[in-house]
Image (cartoon, rainbow, N blue to C red; front, side):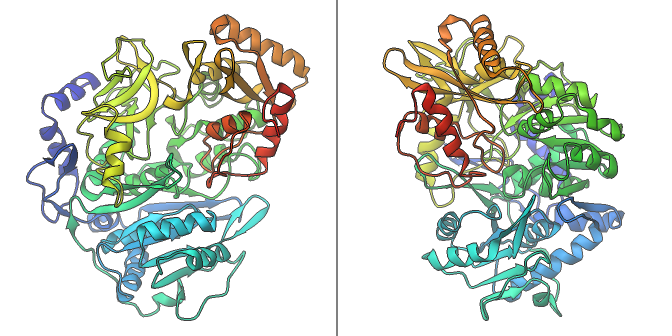
Length: 630
C-alpha cells in the first residue's frame, strides 16, 4: 500500500486502523476498543488496556533474544567518553533503580522530577519511573532554580533524580546548588533526591534527603514491571505558556506506545537493530520520543550524544558520530545544520568521514529554510526530510512517510499529514480556506493516540489554549497553507504573521529569502511597530565564517532580494548584522523577546534562553535603526 492508500484506510475507519497498529505492543490486557469519546471534546485512547512502557522498551527485547544487542550508545566528546549499554544491561540497571524508588515509597501515579544531562543514566531514570508506574517530569538539566521550583510546585513530585553537574564546551554547570535553591524555594517538599555524582564536579549530599545513585542501589531487590491503565500518564513535560506559567503536557501511556512504534518504520524507515540518532536533549520532547522511547520500543539502538554540532571539537563531529556508530537514520534541528554550515560553508570536513551507512536526515523543531536543506543534501548526499510536530503531539503531524512510500520532496514543505491527523487551514472565523491560502493550521478532533489528552491539573486551560478558538479542532498556533497536492507549508507561528499596511505577510517566507543570500549563515525576521504601516519587517542576519563582503553590500543585496521575491508590499528596509541570535537551549529563536526589545516593551527573561547576555547585543544592534530605545 502507498501513502494515499494508508491515509485513506485510516480515514475510513480510524479505530480499526489504530487497533491494528496496537498489535505491535505487548499488552498485559489488550484494549477492547481504540477511542474513548465519552468526555468529548476530551478524547482518550485504549483506556481499558493494561500495559507497561518499560516492559515494551526493554524487557520484551531481552525475552525475545535481543539481550546482547546495543540499546544505548553513549558518545561524549566533551568528556572523551564512549560506552555501549546492551538491552540486558539496561534491564538490570532500570530494575535496580526502580527498586530504589519503590523501596523509598514511590508508587504508581507518584511524580518524579528528573534533572539530568545527556548521559545514559537519564534514560535509565525515565525507564525506571515507567517500570513502576511513576510519572516522570524531565526538566532540562541546568534550568534556573526558580523555573525548577515552579515545576516542583505544579507536579508535586515525591522525589527528584539529578546529577551533580552538566557539561558545556569549556565549562561545568553545577546542578546541585540550583537544585538546592529550587527545593528551598518550592512550597511543595520532596521526600528525597537521588544524585548521580559525576567525576567532573561531585557535590555534597544533605544527610537524610540526598542519596547517592550507586550507593542507594547496593543490595536492592530489582523491581518488576507494574501494569498501568492505557490512559495512565507516562510523563508530564512542561512547555512555556503565554501567561508565563508553564503548561504541563500529559503523555498517555498506551497511545504513546502504539504511535511511537508505528513511526519508527513508517516515517524513519528503520528496522529493529538499526542505529537511530536524534541529536537533541532528554529535556525536550524530541529527547523523550526519539532518544529514549521510540527507538527502544521498536528495538533499535539509540545514540545519547553529549556534545554540540560545532566546538566539540569542530564542525565535523556529527559526521564522526554517524560514521563511527553506523547511524542509519539521523534526526536533528535545522539550527544545528545552520551552525555547521556557518562554520564550514563548503562542507569540507565531511570528506574525512565515510557516512555511507546513513540513509536519510530528518529535520524538525523549527522551520527548515530551503537553503539549509539544499546545503545538507549537497554535502551529505542523502535525502533530507523536513517534518513538523509539536511538544503537544509527541510525534509527527506532517512528514514524509519514507517507510510506506517516499513522497517527492517539495523543499519548504514538511510534506503531507500523517494518518491520525486531519489538517485544515482555517480563516479567523474557522472556515476552511482554499489551497495556497495562508491561514491558521488546525487539526480536526479527535487527535490521534499518543497526543496530549489534557494539561496536568489544568483541563480548563487545555480547553482555552487549544480547543476554544476553533470548535471541533485542535489549534496548533502555527500559520501556513496547503497546496493542491495536499502538501503542507508551515510559514510561521500565528504570532509571527505580521500585518504591513493591511497585508498579512509571513516572516518565515522572508527568512527564506535572507537565508538564500550567500554570505548569510543564519537569520531571523520579526515585525516591529510602525506608526504608519502598523508593522514593518526587520531582519537580523549572522554572516558566514570567513565572509569578506562589505556589510553594506550584504544589506543592500538582502533588501533587493526581498523586493524581488516578496515584493514592494513587504516594505523591507531594516537589517541588523549580529554575531548570534538569542535562542532557547533547544535551538528555537526567541523572536517574541526580540520584538519586545525592539518595541522597548517590558519582557520577562525567558527561562530557556541559552545565553542572556545576547539580549544586550540585540539591543545594541537595534538602536542605530531607531528601535530598542532606553
